[in-house]
Structures are given as structure tokens and as C-alpha cells.
Amino acid sequence: MSETRAYAAAGATSPLALKTIKRRGTTDRDVRIEILFCGICHSDLHTVRDEWHSVVPTTYPCVPGHEIVGRVVEVGSEVTGFKAGDLVGVGCLVDSDHTCANCQHGVEQFCPNATFTYNSPDAHLGGVTYGGYSQSIVVDESFVLRLPANLDLAGAAPLLCAGITTYSPIRRWGDIKGKKVGVVGLGGLGHMGVKFARAFGAYVVVFTTSPGKKDDALRLGAHEVIISTDPEAMAEHAGTFDFILDTIAADHDINAYISMLGLDGNITLVGAPEKPLPVSAFALLFGRKSVSGSLIGGIPETQEMLDFCGEHGITADVEVIPIQKVNEAYERMLKSDVKYRFSIDMASLAAE
Ligand code: NAP
Ligand code: ZN
Image 1 (tube, rainbow, N blue to C red):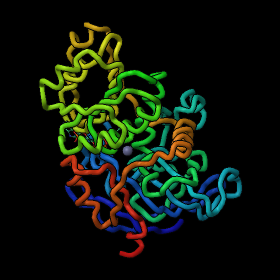
Image 2 (tube, rainbow, N blue to C red):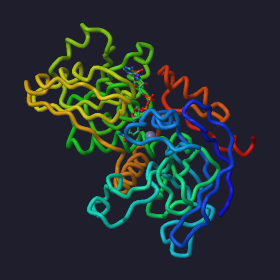
Image 3 (cartoon, helix red, strand yellow):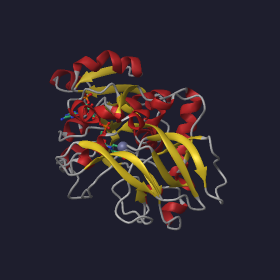
């Protein structure tokens, strides 16, 4: 066992602050990682503030962070895939039962015994798992990802959650080349969705509530931008989309986006607002439309996504911050003022 510095919330209304936490000793199949960068996901904020209480209540203290990039410093005796010095990533998952049908099919995120990177029962130390807002982490090697050497580390960290969460449903939809694809919300997830949809050859349209993000959306790869609060602009595109990825983190009218879909169109929710969204049956019936959801991605697909990013030079657009600015970053995230992901430089934690 070892001790490491971290930023933790003591309760739903407490700011994140410095705390020393314990990490387990490296077992035979474990990899110990010195964390270099960790992205800030809106899920971190939902969890820290216990906004998902009805689904997964938060246990405090809570150390969030599941967009982790770091360097291997120690490996267990049975580890075959990694050695000290390797640059690696860890996303939302750190373990699973390895035996259920979902694990066998490489969708470990749906394993009934999956261990998430934070706020999940910790089989080794008791209590709950602690995430990446810390100096080091110890992870079973099956949940450690190889990082392509050409990627900027601060920009690569968000790929571990925002990247895979948008890559997976786009791939699952099928061949989107030439299809009209909408991305709703230009935040951390949304801007990655734009990059992937464009890379796979779709005609990409961003729906945003922030007119000031229009130029950025086009630069990131969108062909068109719709200001979703403009009813005329919305009406012009009604019934024309093949697929829409909804990344909104807050309450919103999903029916407005269902009406954008054409025949057999699908809207996939990846955003996880606190409250249920009412869906109009009629909006789905006329046009045989469907609403679905998607949760991160399994380990093989996450590696595939990272390799794809390596080949195509894709990373997140990040604003690098010291960890001391994390509480301010949360407030800015709530105001949709992130361009387009905060990435914490963990060297700032050692300096505190
Ligand atoms: P984010 O960076 O805060 O981006 C969310 C974007 O949604 C904002 O930038 C804003 O875009 C738009 N938005 C926010 N409030 C809105 C409102 N009231 N009405 C309309 N649009 C609004 O968040 P994120 O990290 O991308 O995460 C988005 C959601 O996905 C969160 O709920 C998060 O928990 C969830 N998530 C899910 C998974 C999964 O596996 N399914 C994984 C990670 C995160 P504009 O300024 O462009 O309007
Ligand atoms: Zn996340």
C-alpha cells in the first residue's frame, strides 16, 4: 500500500480540496501509473454533486477523474503487456469479473460486476475506488490502454471517456459516410463527436445553444451549425437527419431533436441529465424513429479508438489547468464555457 495526493470532495456541496489517499500495492497483474494528465468530464461534476443520487449515489470522500494519461512506473510479476516507462491511458473502468457474457464480448462496461474508476466498490481496499485527480493509480493490466506515441498527452486524456463515448455509438450506427449526422451540444463529448463523425465521412451538423461557438464548430469539422434556440433554423432541417448524437448534460426537449430525424432515423443519448426526459410517442411513430442510449465503450473498442486517433492525429481541444483551478473549471463547465475540455496537469498536484 502507498499514499498519494489527490483532490477530493468531502460532500455534495463541498469544493474539491487536497487530500491524501491510499493506493493498493501492485499485485501480480497490476500496473502502477504515475498520472500526468486527467481530463474533467461532466460526469465528474454530476458525481461530486451527487446529481445521479437516484441511480448511483455518491460515497464521500469522492475523488473523480476517468480520463487518465500517465507513465507506467511499476508492473506486477505476471504483467505481459506493459513495462516501466510506457505511456498509457485509463478510462472509466478499472476491473470487471472477466467471465460474464458481456466481458467475453468485450463490452465490460455492461458487466454486472464492473468496477468503475471512481465511486465504485473497491474489492482491494474496501470503501470506493478513487479516480484520476491524483498522482498515481494502480490498475489491473486488462484495463490499461496503450497510447499512440504521436498524440499530445494533455489532449489525449479526454479520449479515454469523451473520445470512446462518442466513437462507440458512431461506429455502432454503421457506415455513416455521406449520412447527415447531428451532434447536439458542443462540449467535451460533442466536440469529439464532431471530429469522429467527420473522420468517418458524415455530413456533420452541430446543434448548439451558444452562437459564439459557431466558428469553432466549423473549424472542428462541422459542415453546418444550427442555433437550437432559433425556431426557423430548426424548422428548415426538420425530418432530414439519419442519426443524431445527443450530448446535453441538462434537462432539454428531446422531442425537438426527434423531429429533426428522417425515416428510420435514430437519436442516441450519451448525455446523462439528472431528470428523465419526456419522449412523445407520436414523434417516434411517424417515421419509425428510435431513441437509444450508449455508455462509454468496452476495452477492445477503446484501444481501437485510440489507435484510430493515432493514425488520424485526433486529440481533444484542451485548456490545460493546474488542479488548483478545478472548482473554477466546474463552474465554467456549467456555463458551457469550456473550449472544449479541461485537462489537469497533474504536476501541479506535486507542487502544492
Ligand atoms: P460538457 O462539456 O459540459 O458539454 C455539454 C454541452 O451541452 C454544453 O457545452 C452545451 O453545449 C450543452 N448544454 C449544456 N446545458 C444545456 C442546456 N440546458 N440545454 C441545451 N444544451 C445544453 O459535458 P460533457 O463532459 O460533454 O458531458 C455531457 C453529458 O454526457 C453529461 O451528462 C455527462 O455526464 C454525460 N456523459 C455520458 C457518458 C456515457 O457513457 N454515456 C460518458 C461521459 C459523459 P452548447 O453550448 O453547444 O449548447
Ligand atoms: Zn466521463
